[in-house]
Length: 612
Image 1 (cartoon, helix red, strand yellow):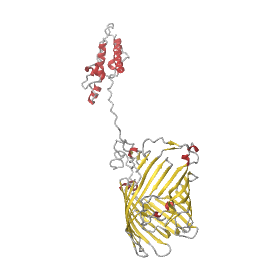
Image 2 (tube, helix red, strand yellow):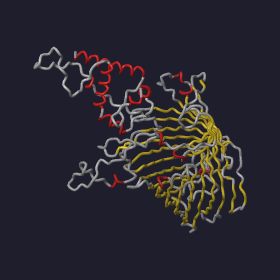
Image 3 (cartoon, rainbow, N blue to C red):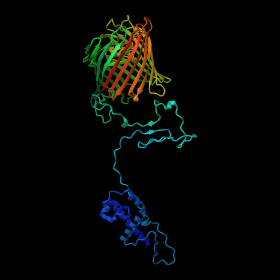
Image 4 (cartoon, rainbow, N blue to C red):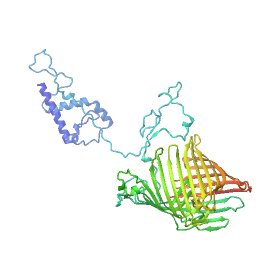
């Protein structure tokens, strides 16, 4: 009979639990005093009304009173079924037909209701909170595991190392001066985090898909060739305004002026490889920049114009006609450009001009021993400027071949060009150039050899000469600064194949005192022409505020190889400061001397540059 009573009680308990599960009712929960919610009534127990959830104290008390609560549930279920409840600690009474002194009956394998463990109350789910972008996950030492964004950084080693053992582990090796340098690349592993990408400054005008921004892109248009284009228009540019004064000695008059320049571009991007670019310089034309000339003329300068200085289309044949190579394995990646476009070769020594031209480029050529070879051919038919000669070579033609060879030790540039002039006063010429860029130890170096050959008599625009240049720079120990030593040697008269008037001369890359500012009629402090001379520049560039400002101190000189004694020495200082993300302020001053005439040279420039 006892076994039957237990089976009936177990069935009643299981039935109550099944009904509660099917109806979605919450099981009775223990209060902080050990009483159940059954005292509040069946409706309150089934619906869970009267409580928003157990408190921490109630959860702790429920865990302690779980056995007692389970026994109370079993007794209540047994009474409802007409079965006499049995206490968990009391011995079960023997059946009536069992003789006295007989051993007790073995317990049944079926567990009693009082032995069933009580289910712990479920914790209420907290509402989801928006998770902000976490900081970068950073790992310190090699043995330190990657920490969570919300965990503070705990170094792998801490404490003093008296006898070679720290509180946490073996002492790390002492850091060398190179490892202590803030210029050294960190060993800490940093995962990419898009939340830490700075916001891109907006352009002056932006139509279509946002430029360099996250989000969905438009469906675009499918051309009959199979190419998908998504047009978008960007308007951007730079505005410059400066006050500058300049005197190069030799009896020349001081030139002081306020000048302005505006470069405005419209970029119609059709696809990642196809675009149309239109550019204007409405405030300047040639060497005339709108502003005011204080000395020597004391008059306004008007450089307003609507001439188009840039207008070209560029694309890639393989992307424009994707059906030519569906698997993209054929040699169809041929780039081309046509129109008035800026061309720069040999670092601006051979060609630095906006030419009406067409160019074709074959990239991704990989002969053995190289990682990439690029070959470009160029033909220009108009807008060819011949450097220091103010007249444009209207009826001239220019042919050029440019090659880049990327190898493991060095990067080579091989160039050749020919100019067929339409003006006999300018003359025809051939041009050759070879450049090598590489690392030599801890120094970055660039060596170039350029040759110009006049096919007729030498003129002011065309001469025969050789120009050798070297640029050596490196970062001093424990700094982010730049120390450079540049030199040149010009033998004969070297001239560029094409050079816009405001770009200065072929020696502009030697130092800041050889470079033209590209603003106003003031030229470089030291003559940038490459004719029977040698010289160089030594400078130190110091960076501040994480690279937002820099200071350059430079000593430069030039001496003639033949002819009169015309040594020139000069010292310059230039400071640049970034303001926000659009403005750069530049202040520069220089002073020098001429050994032949014992004249002093001096000048300065204060400029605001605004990018939009």
